[in-house]
Amino acid sequence: MSEISTGTRRELIQAVRGRYQTESMDGKHRILDEFVAVTGYHRKHAIRILNGSAASAAFVSTRGRGRVYDEAVRQALIVLWEASDRICGKRLKPLLPVLLPALERHGHMGLDPTVRANLMAVSAATIDRMLSGVRASAGGRRRMKTAPGVRRSVAVRTFADWNDPLPGFLEADLVVHSGENMAGSFASTLVLTDIASGWTECIALLVREASLVVDALERLRPALPFPLRGIDTDNGSEFVNEVLLTFCKTHEIEFTRSRPYRKNDQAWVEQKNGSVVRRLVGYGRLEGLVAAEALSRLYSAARLFINFVQPSFKLAEKTRVGSKVTKRYHRPETPCARLLASPAIPDPMKDRLRAVLATLDPLRLLDEIRTIQHHLAGLAAGDRITALPHRDADLDRFLKHLAIAWREGEIRPTHRPAGAAKPPDTGEHAKIRSKACGHEC
Image (cartoon, rainbow, N blue to C red; front, side, top):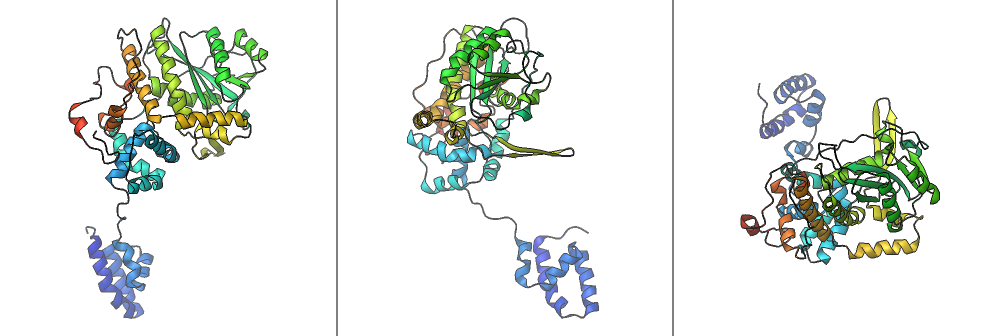
């Protein structure tokens, strides 16, 4: 027997309920047998329905609820999602009260009060549902693959040995931009992430060399918002050597390493290798001074965007019961917000962080990132480029494109397949009006 419709089931309940309630015990058994056979309900569930009032069966006809957020809210979310560099709903939700006022303050968005109120009220799960189609059209994300070397020169520190340290204890790793060929010389990125706050710094290196690592650390120390207290690296020769060991002893920096072939010992920085460096730069081969200069310019904008604008997760607790591992995370926050809440950071430094945050234009930073990504994509493809592109002061075209960028799939030039067309700047796309931002797109 085919399944009956919801409307038929509701009519059957109304017709049978009165007779069921007035019948004798034997009659109720007979009616209940027929009712269960027709509707497919569990017998106990059918008894509750037939014994209840008309109101008790109202749930039978209830199928979801009305739409709360209209298309204008969805279009605004698309723009904000693109402006945040396509982060997930759980990270975008705490970012909205910061990102939206910043875009409004710089004249990039102007929303209707109702749309703005709905944006502030939308949940992280709803954000993911509303953007699911956009994400599917935009394409997925690639994973990175790296492999640490093996050295046994300094003390070992595992993932479980951190024990909630003060800001200033960093994990360091090197990401190479060799493409599919490790032969010859190529650019690399030194990645450092703070365990306490998630603050991440990326430094471009012309080649993979130990002395350049120490030079980069020497230049980085004054720019950090906390004192450099410790460095934890893998076992590569660019880290575990006399040059870096002497540098750490001279500046009283604790120097430790992970266990060989145990990448989870450096889970903090390994995660940033993928979510920051590979996400920004991709997997192409970059070599020469022009590529290193482009990487440096990219990271100067990305460090502000990542540390001041983009919230990140921080693991709060990890428990194992048998083969099941349960992880619990703190509420997503930006590394800057974690430093502002830390009692270990002095008030003058917090004032400097607040001053930088107040002047940032997230959209201008993202435009700069995309511009350099186009440049790097050309270098990785083998184009003969000798000069860095100029910064575009007019952001109108970039802003208008955010509302429809998802239709073109992968927006990051460094992740597009070779030969893929660049996003159009004019034509039909320029005539589309966005309900979210009120601009012609």
